[in-house]
Image 1: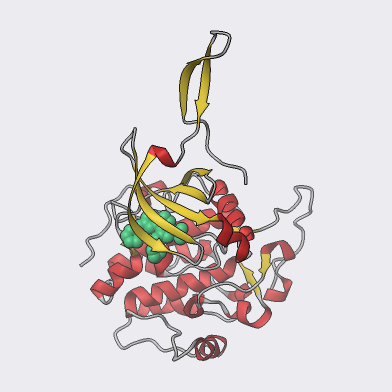
Image 2 (image 1 turned 180 degrees about the vertical axis):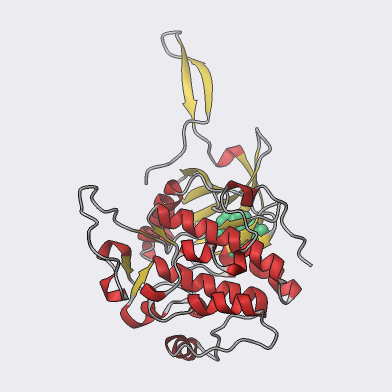
Length: 322
Ligand SMILES: NC(=O)c1nn(CC2CCNCC2)c2c1CCc1cnc(N=C3C=CCC=C3)nc1-2
């Protein structure tokens, strides 16, 4: 396990020959005071922590080494670390500052999101109005765009994994089931015409192995076990629907029945669902991933009229969640 993070402190020491030497020190468990548990995963616990020297607050994800190995989760832990190391300069991603370890555990020092989960806010409000849906939808889409441009598919986007920071801005987390796409060789000619259906999406654009949460899983993942960038946009369509309707579009008594509704595109809009948002959702919840709206077209959709994409989106005040 390769720890990450530059040496974060330098201490002057005198060596055996009386020479003053610089000792580069990395952070460790003793540099933090730990507080409440923020969440428990199947092989990790996320805890509130304060850096004793800087008093900066973090969320530290603690992973039990023995449990990771026993549950064969080493691959997921490395995927999460490699993904977070790749996604370091976007405000919508929970940032990994450093990792360290001791005998028993691995530690990921991450951004603290004091606003909790988007799902928690939605539950308290029942539904979001169009303005709030537009703002939070735009920040989520801007973050998905950044991930995809760096060859990362999240594969488990859902309101529980969309956290909110102290400014109530979006912070997407939990990259343990992400897929890092093999980048194309620079010399590879791009002459091929764009694929017209999922089977023609180039291998390096697709990812195999089943992941995800029932209500947000895309049909292509259920039918041919392949996730692609468009799979994140299917989940995005489900999230937009859920913010306005107060419930996800596909939800049944059990996972199997939910899957049946997804592959049959069996969902309805509640009365009063805004027409422009309905048009957007209908262009995202499309069974064939190659025909699903792509990010640039989503950004230009009427529903996002008035949104200034890019840095501006992360400077404006978050709308009051009324
Ligand atoms: N799995 C993770 O990486 C992770 N899990 N949590 C807590 C979960 C609680 C259940 N829903 C999903 C998130 C976090 C992180 C990243 C790092 C992270 C940073 N801040 C918070 N903050 C929270 C504050 C209040 C309630 C829940 C989380 N949480 C996390």
